[in-house]
Image 1 (cartoon, rainbow, N blue to C red):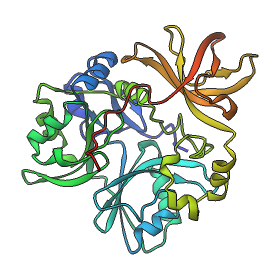
Image 2: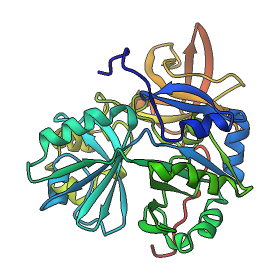
Image 3: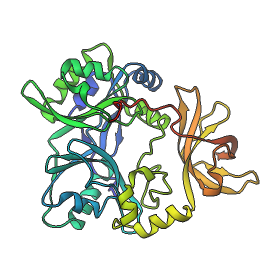
Image 4: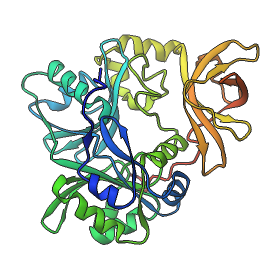
Length: 372
């Protein structure tokens, strides 16, 4: 548990953000930019052009050692043995009973694995990895690296101008690029539902890279506020809100992250419970909700059935700038998770009508080559 008296850390780009007019707020133990020009404007700019996000609070972990994929598979449910070099896979760090301790991205990087974990949980994740992995596995917390994300339909054109060859990457593929004499590890991935890239850069070079990107008129700096509304429209869960140790991958509707071989063989933490939930359905399930009216319904609101019985809770909710209406996601009793089910939401004594709807709310625009 994080000590609330713990001092707030600063990002490598702290001064850069302030110079660009950011409003800073504490988040995941860091001072971070919540907005620059307004959340609505930044959200729509990213959907139409390219937004630059600072996600350096995330943990970048590099693993080495023999039989590394097999070792990591004892903690993660993904099929890492089948992961090709330079390919990413979304996965989860699981507790012994199958609860989600964190969600993460894992990339095979030659003989190593590169994991990006959530900022608020990275200290606990590192403790879990160090305690539960074999002593032959070496973990490097890459504290000297910053992480930037360039997201939106113009991202590829902007970045390929700066780094020719980046456009050849496909969704969930990564590679090493040289920017002058500065090495950049770049993946075609992100957290907005848009095409885009995440760029691991030495902290000392982060401001120079940010300047080079925003020098292109199609790029603007974007804060946490728009990052949250973009990921909500994309139906992407946020750890600590939509995911937690009391949630399993089946409850969270993240079955795609459990490889076919892993389902057959098991051998990951909580596999007996998780595979039983796959066969018999979990008690609860994460769903998307379209909310009637104009007022957003926020995290913590109760979800009720037609008779007023509590059947779940909202875990993320807000106004969708793209759709022009309120949307939310939450957990409901599995019997109430069928698409089209009408439910009531209770927030501060007021009732709202909602309907279970498919996610994402706004279609993903990831770049996949035919046959890739």
